[in-house]
Image (cartoon, rainbow, N blue to C red):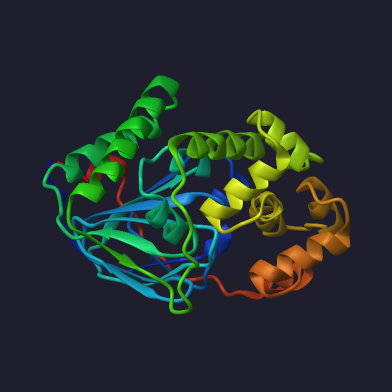
Length: 312
């Protein structure tokens, strides 16, 4: 399977405000395109997996930069701000956003899992010659609308990501203090976290608390809070708020968005709680975010090739 060369290579620019990923923080999202240089950073509630079919991509992450080349597989936690700041003119990639429940299905070490959820980026350093074909197939399956194919592709992708630990890879960590040392989590604990994430992703817009969340995994609330914090670096409430804020971010990008209505529709019980949580992640109030979105100029773009033109 061979990529076609672009007749008129040109960099693409992309406005994150046009993204749809924030609207579906509890669902799979797949981009398959020329990556766009982003006007500003954004965040979303899923873990993001990139595969570079062609060219190069440079990211500004929260606390570090990442440079990806053709054949690289990268994985990072989308809950922290990230931004594509440059690409080659011929760049082409897929960005797969996996709900956190699938991330905790991965059989990675607790140390590696903890570093990823705290903002590190995992990158392969030994490209696999079969990745071009398999990622192309996984994208096709994930976008097919057939649940059996979607599930199969996710299962295979998880196995591919797990295989990274058997091969050379590197981890780019944010600049800052080292994470505190913790005892490794066992398989049962990760299973509990997966159940917790699945329940939260389904019910984050409802009025849920630690008792409801722990009950979904049939464990004690104190244990649920402890094991989740230990593995992700977030409290249960912080993760619930992240999904709510990702959803609210998308609503605020719509015309005539009402901040109070967005707060209620996103699951926040009050405007003050919404403002406080939004400021913590975005560094500004929801009102300022909405005004900033409307004031941003439209970025230049290039015509994207139709899907059937991208491969031989």
